[in-house]
Image (cartoon, rainbow, N blue to C red; front, side, top):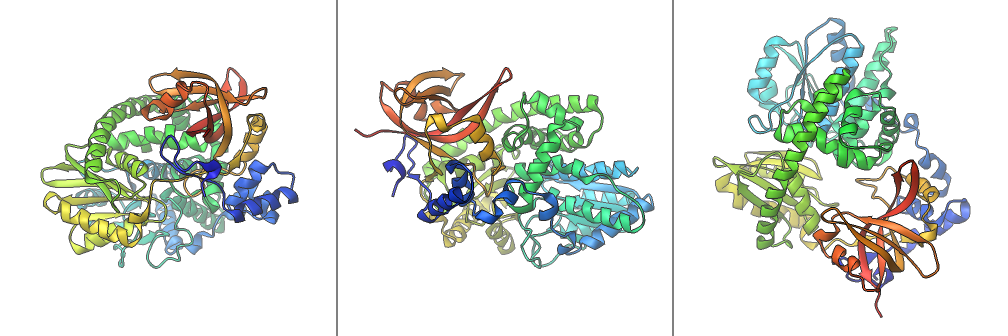
Length: 581
């Protein structure tokens, strides 16, 4: 049964309201508390029961933080790092080139610096070295260091870690593990095959933070104190959101507290990055995922791989400003490259068909730094797991993104074991692979078969899930602030969306190249402003701009618009449907 009778909106989606059970739970929450219906609807959808409402709306990290000892090898990893610190050993940090890797490296570097000890940072070049440790780099680091700590990588790096002869290696990671572990001193990873999976939602920075908690415990046992770990949660929050980790349990508390820390602008790198990104309001999960994260990532995608980690770790405001400016320029260049690859990949995928269990595209010269972003765009367009691969000299390097309920990482690892891929790994929602060009077609066919067994071929055009109905007069700044208390929203906890039924368009204006600003309401009642980003990339812009007096059901997410010190409610419009009759 479609919500408001919208079986096919202007964007081709069916609108779906909350299940009967959720609506019943929301009604019960409203009766048991003084919460507005709109807030109760969100809490009910998130499975929050009446007695737990207050604890959920104000999550305390101390109540949600897991025992670091619940992860295998944690005590051994902390003991080895503490021994290196005490003995003034030379430490190298080998980090992945994305936000999670950069933030994980920065966490360790900042902690060590505050303990009076430095570390060498090594981030591999995405094109020349690829993901994770390689034998040459590990052997070189081992020749001049006593300890190598691999963050956000290393779980599958058996041969490279073996190449670090004479030097201990610690692995702090969250990617899916194989049946055997590499020859490291410790492998701390909630996604090891012998782990329970209870902490599988942690990103690498979350794992590193738990290591720092354990280090603090071990320091206290010797009568010493460590740095204030709460001040490091801005880095954990950034990595958690940017790595699309589910915002549940302790992850939600990490992000909530981390945003408060970030708002104080005490970390030079993040303050400088916020400035070049034009952030003029308190940071939110949206800012982490769409403004700050892409800029930190830009160095690893198309520039110097270590720029992001250096920015996050620096305590020098002048260095931070210079690095932030450089990353901002690289991000603009990345967007241009991405647009070219996205157009080519989408055209190829559409020709092949967007209704297969796997949607994929491959092309010569496609930059390895943008294939993951383009794969995400294909996934959004098709509602199916998607892979995009850049080909060069007979080798394809690709990245994939999955949809809820479909595990992409495991079948990619299986293809690597079967010999169809040169290498591959990742986690449920995102994965990377390297494939010989002459094995491309059979590898993608086989991957599609494995994904079909999970039901990927049954996915239809994504429904638009809505939490309930609202009228413009009810959409106040106060209501939005209450809704945000149920957040932050992101992966695993989607942002609430509401429908505004039978609305007249009072004002419509094109903004920039392809955005639309409107004002809507009902006769004689309050109106509400809305912004629709990318409206003219699809049917929404033309239909609403040329409304001709017609009424529409409108749907989207509420947010607060700040302008010249004033705040007002607005709708971030995502869909619309003409009112029949």
